[in-house]
Length: 465
Image (cartoon, rainbow, N blue to C red; front, side):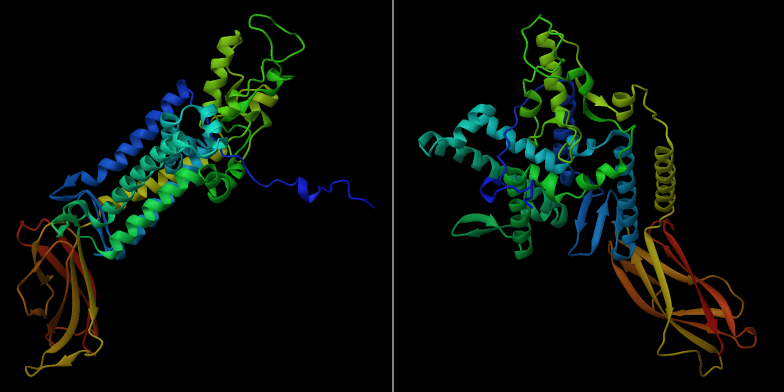
């Protein structure tokens, strides 16, 4: 029996035409442009902000330290960042349940850089039709010149992006002030790792924003795939009012046609879409909710004298059931509760975080012993970590305990910012006073150069066995 669904191989076309969106202005596009370029400028400026004499945000991976506005995080503080990513994930889930994929349309780095690259093509080559025309025409002087200018600007944007990304890791001081002279010409004196990072960031920016574009959103980014699972009937998404718009067809301005809906089939919603989809086909995984189609359709509705809102932010409940949306619903309350708990936990943990760490452990190579004076001696290894961004001098003492005393090699320990120091100490006990086989002890480390601003206490056990 013949298969009615069979498609001849020669008729299969898996290629996808390059998307050249038409740029449109309007309420939502104004918001979108402001939000995208504010984030881009913030990305460029943040590495230059200094706090307490150091780069305010610095992911110093080679030094195994992260500095964020006066706070120093070491590898053992990685749980703070795990906490941050959990909060970011739940925040994204909350926004998605309420307003759909607005992150993609208004704040995603892929969207921001793609917009810059596409706008470069518009400035150099022209609007959408001119770009398609140039794609088809053979290579000539004009095409080589304009394509060359576009490529130069793309490369410059990629270089700026790569150097900014790398400066978050190696620091702006090293990035922009490490120069050497080669044959009388100043050249960057960067490490191999820095050059490698520059190449990776620059190459990824150039390829993703210049050529991958919507393919990154539709085929690689996982968010576009699982977003539909989080939508419900009350999720606010970009929607085409099918009941009002169909059947679609052209008509003259000011003349009504009772047989037609409000959609004039101008295809402007398709032309302005950065992923090249037709919103009139319903919700699609490619839609990033940039609302360009809303502004374009509203502009056309104004020109033909029809009401705005044929394409608008709406919900399934409003469009299909003609009922008001339910803003407050159990799923939103659940995310709000989780986010509130996470934020409260983060604030409590960070506010109680002391930028001084003390660790103490028994010396496993030497248990308790009796010295020449007949005293019981326990040996410990203490580790003091200065998590501040200034040098400090610390003293260690044993909190008062009858029959116990501290024997330390140093009275004070100077530590540079983020420096750690391991030091052996001994605690001596009088067996006439210490009658328990295990006695709890407390060691305290205090900064002595600033009046005891930083303090840390750690507990352990003194044994007589």
